[in-house]
Amino acid sequence: MSSEFEGYEQDFGVITAEITGRIGKIPKLVGDEKKQMIVNVEKQLDEAKELLEQMDLEIREIPAQSRGMYSSRMRSYKQEMGKLEADFKRSRIAYSDEVRNELLGDDGNSSETQRAHLLDNTERLERSSRRLEAGYQVAIETEQVGQSILENLSQDREKIQRARERLRETDTNLGKSSRILTGMLRRIIQNRVLFVILGIIIVFAIILAVYFSFRGH
Image (cartoon, rainbow, N blue to C red; front, side, top):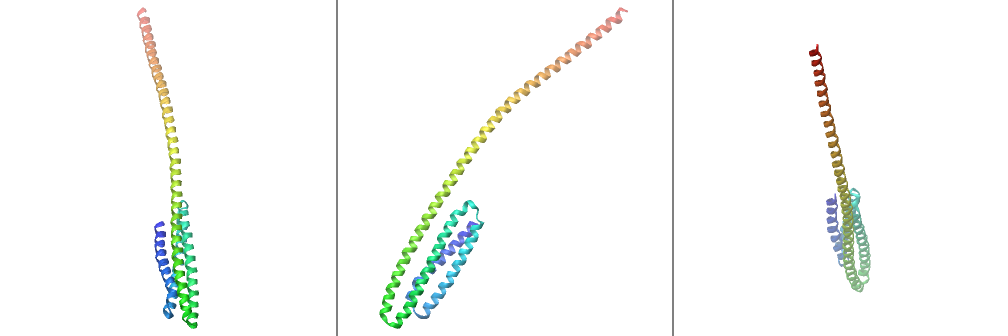
């Protein structure tokens, strides 16, 4: 299930990179080309939202013990999505301002070009910051998962040691019981042998008594 989530992650990364590049180009285009670029970005934003929805559904199917890391990554992607939408909104506002400036004269174009460059540089810095923050968050979550695994292993080792001690005690008790049973069996055999010997002696004595009795007559 996590492999499907990672596949959606890769698709999301590709499409957001394309969106970012296109948003940066919007202020630099003019006329129909700029309008078409805006339409394309809107479509890709819808596709990115659908990918986020698919990732949300996949997270619900992931086991609870592994869900925390994916949920944190999901929050980061949603934040990035919100940033892209905000950047797109600003680029559209810049586009509207540029149309107005084209009607007013070249001075508006010059100031708007500078503004577009500033926005582009700001976007790059913010994207780098988000990537660093996401990487740091993943590292923290990985460390937490590792600590949890080590704690579980330590608990399992203690359980195994206690089980071994119980087995040793059981073996000792079984050895004592075996020796007791062997002694009892030996005594039973000895008693039976004595009874047999006594029975033979009694029968022999009776035979002798009968023999001497008939001989006397």
